[in-house]
Length: 306
Image (cartoon, rainbow, N blue to C red):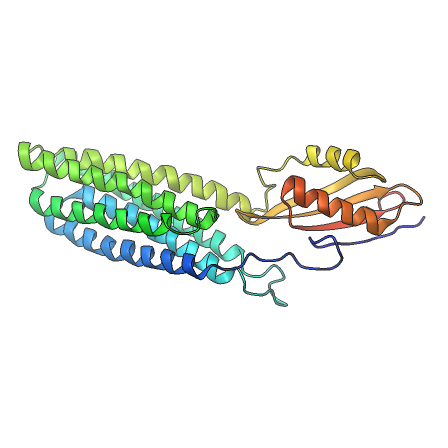
């Protein structure tokens, strides 16, 4: 029984690590500026919420906290993306952003629980709310969100980190608008239940984002198969599209981050076929068809040793 084992790491030409995307310094500066704006006004909103008695402002500050955390993760992703792997971290530092996202999402779910609890208390035991102060703070929050969104939207629009950060900030605009609406209603009607009512609305916005983030980051941390990949489809495609491949099996696919997938697989080839040519063809196909830049392929000429 004989076996030929060949491995490739993403470029189809041998033992070469996949290339990490170049870090765009302009994107880094935009994300950092947006993060500082958001985090700074988050503190102002918390103070304004406490002084005015508005739970909606505090809830919106919680939403801004999720945005600041998302911007921070985007910034870290840019900073860490070119850091080389070492003996202790063979894949480098890519998982740091995923772990931070998971912890951040759990924290936000706890925050939502507190906001909902406080909202119920406010319905049964209303407190005095300073509508004027609440309105000015909410308007300031809206302006900060508009500026942060402009900063991100003027960056590299094809970059997934920039897109994700911009979506978070855009979502927070709804929280600021909700706080403004609540302040206006209180100023003109004195109906304070609108404050906890809209704070529940903002809290549910946070909960939806947090649950989605927990699922996505948890799936990555558990090394689940990327949802965009169909293992059976990959098997069939390689068998039919790569000459000399008789069988593809033992496929393992997982993600380092939401945008970086990794794969290993075994491929049995026909007698007399050049394994180097097949290896290059398989990696080229994985890169072009399935956008997998890093793959380790074991070439076999006999029954799988496993």
